[in-house]
Length: 346
Image (tube, rainbow, N blue to C red; front, side, top):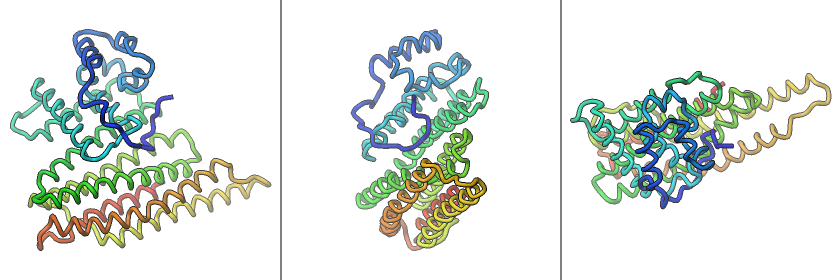
């Protein structure tokens, strides 16, 4: 069965795809010049078929714009590979190369103003892709999961666009290295927070079918709050106006973990109350295992967050000036508080 949910996300060996291989390029050319969706899928082996975006998209989306769909498929397969993300600098190189392809598509199809930045052009193509993939969608449970999962792959690309812009705005090599170190810690945090949020959602809804759409939607919120934080830091460095929403990171950290523990304790209490109404019935083995896994993830996340907060303070010193000092901290705390809201959502 194809992996649909957005977690866990592990490490990718970049050696595979700086650009599509010859076979993929030939298929893209054939599809864009008249190959039907069925013909395209029949040209793939089983692994290629199940791992591709075309399999999960509608006939309408394919027939409307096969060229764009296959261009997006390159990103989809890369982000969803078992080894993604690789080391941050390697991933940044891959994303930059892919951004150039999105920009080429934007220019070739005259999608808008030519004077806008490469980042805006690439984002515009992804937005076009979101609209394309919604064509012919009936919003079944599976379609909602796939739609969220696809948006997730696009949002991961958007994160790397912000990373590259911030790196290019740093004045010193020391600042750049701190940015890369922060990113690496963030990736570790993301895995744990994604698991915690997904498990809490599953426990709240007893593993029902709604769990998939809600969990994937929560993951999109997790990424959205990260991009808000990163955009704020970028604005601080470049001297643009920024939103100073936030608090002290230590307070935000305590708030987040308090929310995690409160959610778990309420779930256990409600389960005990439910089972007490049925003589002799006890919590299921899967319930117990999920609670244990979630508690372990919370425990493992604590030292990572503490290390991240210490590193942020160093980054704040390196990239900000007196009038903007501590605003990096506020941006980071806002992200953590948003994550607290997600793990308490019901």
